[in-house]
Length: 326
Image (cartoon, rainbow, N blue to C red; front, side, top):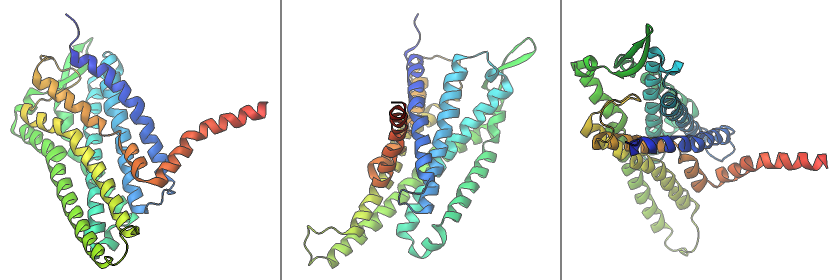
């Protein structure tokens, strides 16, 4: 009997994903950290943080967890203590990616809807404090993951592999943590992002209608810089948060309906619809760590210019060297 289709898909999908996602996020961090894209320091901090979290997801979750651990089942990565730490880090990196996106959405909400609070909250220092606080909170919040898995087998007195601990997930604290984790990673962020986007867009539309009314005597062909900036704000906000929600949706539904605690050593029926739905949702949620570079390039002209320069720079250097050798 051949290999299940879902495993074949994973073997092809994750190497392609990491080969695109890691360079894309590295380029984003490099460009935004220079502070030459015309963005405020506050929003630059959030964007760099999101790109860094997405890079960690690509490295830890996609590369280490789904590629190295899968293809090298008897390497040091499969020692139970190491395996538990990898599973813990996959939870931490995903949480960081999710909540950094929520933090960015809330910052844009404050900028547009809370003018009195804007000058105090929307600063570089506050952004660093908020992101640091979330990081510390998430590091401690995911500690139960270390106790949620147990040794799969013992070979020559060595503990190998990880599997879901029946004792943990059947206990009251384990069940509570599972439901809390699903709410923390999916439903609570979804609710906040949708709420903040709704309030932000409503405020922008109301302000835009008022501004158009005040400028009604002018020609409609005249460009209003303020309205154009608001339009770009809506596009940037919606593309980032909308892409996040869309790509996480299948995983969110399957997480609640199946309540599977899959690991790389899942030993159940690999053709089960619940397992396939969970793994498909996982593929899409990891894909959400890739498109932000394309979003920034599509919505931010200065970022697009810097991206072209960075991409062309190696070829420019090679051409210079070739000319000198000639």
